[in-house]
Image (cartoon, rainbow, N blue to C red; front, side):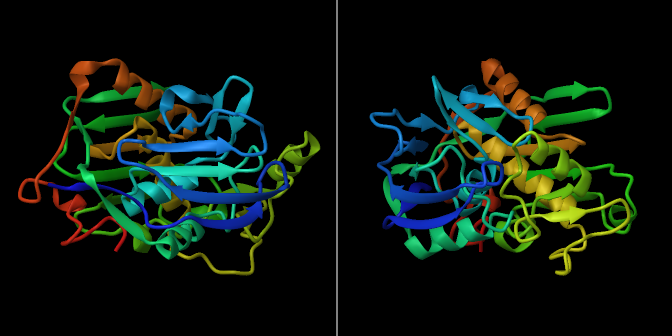
Length: 304
């Protein structure tokens, strides 16, 4: 039987919030089986933990934001993506600010942090959400869809008319039975356009954004001195985001995700539509013999 996992020991780091520009202390703490991933603001006295579930998403305009009452936690998608990639089921995420630190704009720092803490198998079967029928959301030429598939596969297409992006791949497909998260997805950084960054700063956002934590483009070129980590890093980062957003279903997925020009809003709408239709999915456990190859830890974990 595949078992649930948490981290073996608490671990902490310090970073900067992308939008607040504030210093943030992030602490990851082991959690009991069946806890799920929960976020807690330690700077707010007696605040309740917020589960990493789609129903708690309150804003998706610039990042995925969780909110319960007056308590907000922003930019959760990269950390959740790393948790999905490392097969972490149960985790307490403590923050002393309203935003998860952006680190280098990818999930790489979170992967290092979790691997430094160590992984611990728990005495409880791992639960999977199995897609049983097609679920889809559309908005004009934008699309996000989940399909039945015996494994975990993502197929993402973007369409940016920009000289620098024209030179890179704008579609990427990964089947985690064949490729691994840390090698193929985890290091892909977020990206943005210089004029958008300036506009956001004028309204008090993107205060922590820099060439150290994002790929920034002007009208003609990439402004970073560092080369792209992947030839198609832009679309791979969109997959990184999608993996984090989809983990808000509350379980690792058994299915295929197809997207065209999707983003946080469509991803969240897709997960909500899925969960609103009990006929579209089932929750089940797997023995080692029957588990999809993508999730077989001894053979090829998502993150090896």
